Length: 475
Image (cartoon, rainbow, N blue to C red):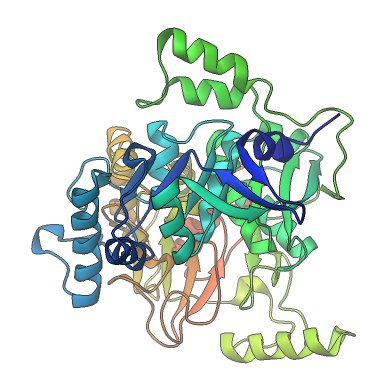
């Protein structure tokens, strides 16, 4: 019987399935962070249960860690307690832990793939919704809650149910000036934030196959913003070449055996999907969100939409509320919106490719961050990414342009550390969510690609990166 990639991975990890569809699923990798794990460890201690398979777990402090002056420690007491608790819990239970001072530290969804801890065909869970990132390597990866974290720690299994499957085929040729982030935002804009609820999305088509592994991670990372349970991409040579170079991936004969199995991780040609969606990106322009949900997105050459144009009263009210929160007026050109801060980083766009794309814009345009931009941050997704970027001299490009070059961490993606927005501040952000207060109480977030964020930093407002000489090949 023909199967989708999702079904192949799910079926090979199903320990038991009851008549009602409830399944006990074996979990290959369990990723932990300092925010969602403390209660699970405390409950284990209370019940006098041990961690079943410590070696299958990896913990990384990322949400609360400072991205500057780490030698001074964490100022916020709650953040400090959470980071310290993660270290203590891992030490007690024999779990590998990349703490704040570890050279391997970073955002867990950047660290695990770059180390080779994420591998094709695995089931991977983490107490973080953007675990879907790992699906770029042909893994079944998704976020779980606190009680589920405890269950995985104690049994290395999870009680779950099979998701429906959706294939999103991206056709055309991605235009110059556009990236995986623009594709992700366009997909979310087309599907809506609930359009994939209950589904696991498999991304397919020539545009997806042409993406680098970093770009694929961006796409799968954002699948959750369309409501999906997970995002996946079939294994191909791009996947295998990436995995071959990872420090903790299989080596020698074990690697060659693995590669043989990995090549089968694709949907069968005649596999049935519960839903099919197609998107042609040939005419796509760089995307910028205008509202308080990733689905509220338009091209840089567009305008803020008018809620009055919406027939659905619920969406009309939602759009109106978004305009009020964002302090925007309908029909305002996106390029007329000025910004206060810029954030390049996060598990969506904190990899080397992302930093290089932003640096290329800064080099091509010349000049410095606009005077109205109060802060521009470049935050590598891991300390390894930071070292690689510095070896290429990218840090000098950022610093010379007026950016602050930081240590790795979640940073301004969410208001759980010192990097945050103040009320009323507007940010050009490469992160994944633009919800009310996501990056700081009262803060206003616009999502876009690293190249677009760099262009906005120099202009002090949103600007079409395709207009910058040298970026698109223009002279």
